[in-house]
Image (cartoon, rainbow over all chains, first blue to last red; front, side, top):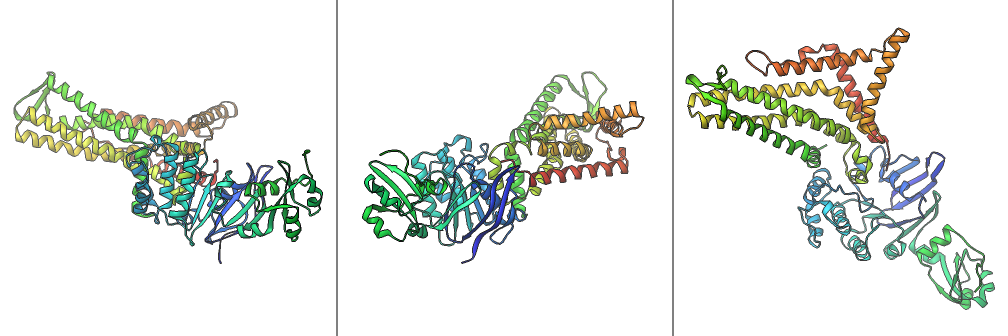
Length: 291
Length: 290
């Protein structure tokens, strides 16, 4: 499958601070990729590079285009929502729709109106009159009505309550996503996107720590929930991360071939993304705290 | 860029600045109309042959009184728009960079070149046209008013003929914009360049250069020519304004600003303006603040 995004040796410095450190990344079409990282990890910088909003060193191509040099042509194929507060507050809904329709060749007014039918948003409303959740619905309606090949979402549900957050991802999956479209999502609320991702990228300190499909992740990583009395046996299998649990430990293993042996020590489970994330970003292999 | 996308860019500017670009003109135009109508209603005296005497002064022809109305209305609108443009040029390439709104605009396939040139065209094309339309409508309503108080067909026809002055005033509006182009583009550049206050830069840089030039001339015996250019520019503006206000004997609209400016000076002014706009576009493309 052709790569939609290809990054080879991509770096970015802000003065002495390294935001991206020689990153290599390939993203194929039709994927939903979670770009997960702590604050200051380089997620937004990478997305800005992909969108042509910031220059980066190295080789970066998006749909065969140089994002910085061909930003306008690229944005005919790429949509993005930076966060929920970027729609101009002085604009009316009908003006936003009219503007987007006029400047974006792949925008469908009919689709946008269909999305808005299920909301309480009126055409005459000004953005500043809408609640944060409604602004998100409006932005999503505008973006989903664009038949783009790549959708970039940078913390799209930041500050929204749980109902709007759930609705956001439901709409995204039901009304937008198909096998031809690629979505990149960054968020701190990893548990919300866990079930919809096809691929996972962990980034920290400007470096890619993990780049794998969810299937690979499930096959590669396993968590053993073990009682305290079996901890030495479990530690002998070289976990990459150990955390305290009530009455025992959770030990995370990478590429462990002796799953049967582990199963004999306790309960095996697929690690949650947040546990895996912590394990990769902040490995902790000694047992801490007395149980 | 397609035509409807260009129109959308203009609409966006109008939507964003509707209070300053639309409502201020309509309100000032309406207030001026009301005050003139009130003034003439209390002071006019129609005589034979379509001559009008106001407050006992020598009589005017209907055509001339309409011309005077249009010229004063035009001058007032130019002053109102001068304030509007001063604010607009300083803020338009600055304020969107300071909010996350810029991320929405950058998510649309519109180049910075198109965006900056639209803003320039708003000032250079749309403002003169807006003045023309408001002036013409106001002038027509004024003729209607004159027709009501003096319903003589020949006089009304003569008054209607006076409206042709608005077309000449449209030409004058374009000339004023051309005269102001170096200042307009300088303000736009400051708006694109400033990190904190465009006004501070737009004022302090010329002021600093002026002081440097004065020091160089006084203590080192040479000049940077900045003060000479600035003086010539200000003098030209003052002379043009004075000419506009006094006018010629028969037509207040017969102003020729272009002939007042030499070809060399005009070329320099255009070159400076082009450089400022080019620099503003470059800054918009290469500065990443959010």
